[in-house]
Length: 119
Image (cartoon, rainbow, N blue to C red; front, side, top):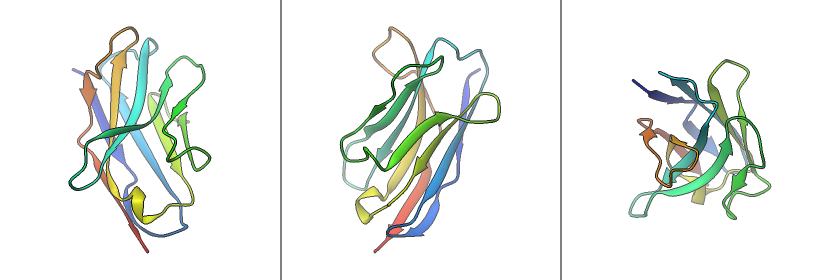
């Protein structure tokens, strides 16, 4: 059974940084695309960044380009999201997600981790 477990959320002041991690287990993820989504109160869940597990050019939403970096973590089967220059608009629940390459929908989701940026 596939499991995605996020960690690293919390409260940070505007201008600060946080690093989110997603630990994936349950299968080999080499053919998967890993992503981070976020959902702010009253808003739809949107994709923030994504990365093909075995390499390639990452995707970033325009709102986070130049500030966020998605990468494979040092630990096996982990994906990280480094978030710098955070602002109040980044406040949301952040979710790790995975899908098989070739599928449009993300099949697996983590439980989410709260990120709150105080201004």
